[in-house]
Image (cartoon, rainbow over all chains, first blue to last red; front, side):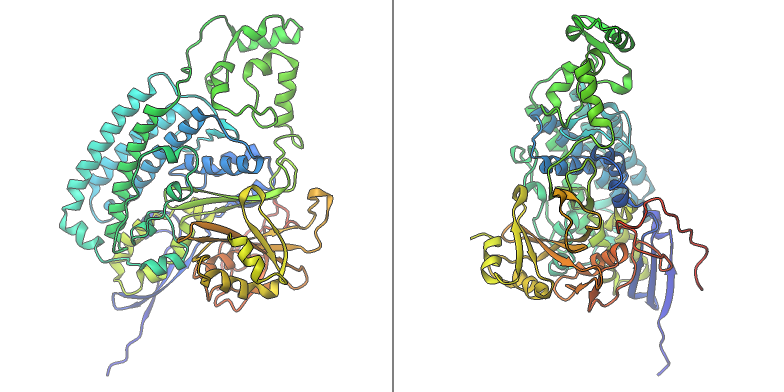
Length: 440
Length: 164
């Protein structure tokens, strides 16, 4: 009998096709993986610590940087947790906008995941097609929020701005484009022998294991469990929408691919339904009636000439678009101690100015009651939960985020064990590790 | 009978406090009862908490919420979910500053493994019986536990090369 020894191989920090920085220490027997040790934390930016040092509203830019492929869902999750703590609900129109933007983000996330996996398996054209489709959606996001990734769009008690004129038409156009790309990609991949063989029966996990590891999202659904936060604990207006939760059977990479493909279609359907059901509201960018430049209004108000200023609409800088009274009130909760006043109020009278200052000054901002809440939303990778402890001040005492890909990564050793070294790439692709939310 | 009442009935002596702020059912128990309560939550029909969804800790040093200083320093917070019954429960265990140690739940839920490592890393709370309790987000050479309230948020610790 010749002596057999296993080999220790260090992978990373970086390569596994660069979804994020991670280090794997693998024990190999020839080409078979016997064991894996995962080392992470290379992108740790102290999200939770920083949230404890700023006011509630200032946490939004940090949440953008958790799952940076679908930042809108993080924004929604954080805002809804604080709203639960405060015990307020947001107007219907804002709820629809939140769902709309979340579902668009979910599609961008799944597109990125599948595109990257396909590219790593050699399907470069699929990657390019899907990233093109993702860009269509980012354009929509950019149009509404003003940014592609670091959007900070959602506010506690509402959203930053209303939809732009003819947004629905452009959205339908883009949805049609994305569907075309999905069909194209489906033809290129689902009937592709190479892709099929690499994905099938690799990275397997059973239902019991997935549950024990606390895995949620498409990863769990690929094992046959139909758990989706949007169905189990419907938030916003998800209970009014008609959608299905696609599930797999085997819990391998191929099933995860199918789940994500099917989920994208469901998300696109949801976006279409939102446009049919959304309560009508004003169109941002349309200035009607008497209009005054913001600087002029401030000057008049400073001199005390506030007579009649209330009826005049303020012409704002494009970065503040949407925060005039006419658009603002339909999309933010009627709570003066939570939501910033419309810009006419801030510029045109002292009460509005004080209200604004009270919300943005340290030690004054939003002050939720004493207590603690946990609120889950369905992120692109699974359940994204925020746990906030309030001590009655304007800063969170503790802000914990439950990142969906953290439990998935912790199950990586059992996903990889027994597979060959080359299977690391499709498995790691379908894990859809996002270092931003994993390491926080 | 909801989950909170079931736990209350079974472990009335071990429970320090319960509340349901904004509908989040919460049980605060004595540390010694953690394993038995967790086992009960997992195995009792009608509860079936098969998910340990989240595990974290809170540091109450300098806490003055409600103008009351808490008489313990840390709280380890468990969020359970039952897939079958679609219910959630929060379990909290108070941990003393002098001997920050609680039992591990790795034997019941595999997800506890990494979460407990994170709590050890961030708060320095030890988990008795954990198979591999080492830092997860920070590097091994890091000194201190960054999420403790007495760790300044702007403190820097440059890492100068690995040890070996």
